Amino acid sequence: MAADPGSVRLVRTEIMRWFHELRHGDDALAASIAVAVSEAVGNVVRHAYPGAGSGRVEIEAQLEEASIVVSVSDGGTGMTGRAGRDHNGMGLPVIGRLADGVTVVSDKGGTRLSMRFGLDGEATRRTLFAPLQERSIAAASP
Image: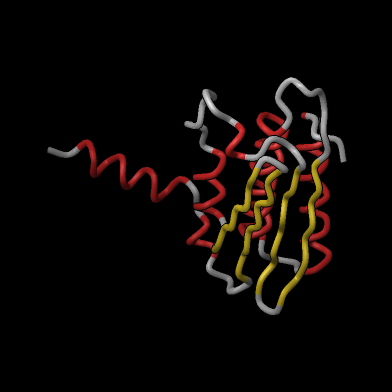
């Protein structure tokens, strides 16, 4: 699909639909997958094709034994092609908190980010905000 802002919402909707066709009842996992994939596609939209107009983003999702693996790929500049640009975004850290495993392969020909989500039912591990609050409180203490 086109790497444009409208694709982020479309992908999020389609991933949720696909997930619920596979497995009903784990709303926390479904939300984690949707947010992580949205962040990955958002990164492609914002960073992969600077000044070149719109490129393409490919999403592949599959069930592998006790995991769901989702890959987001583009043919853009690659993460190494972002010299002089802001690298302080929260996209990859958010994805890292939500997924059980993340692999990024990137060069000047594009980037492929793969995320693995275990189907083990440990939804508490995917709570994005609670661990961050605990760290903030600990950091504020003398």
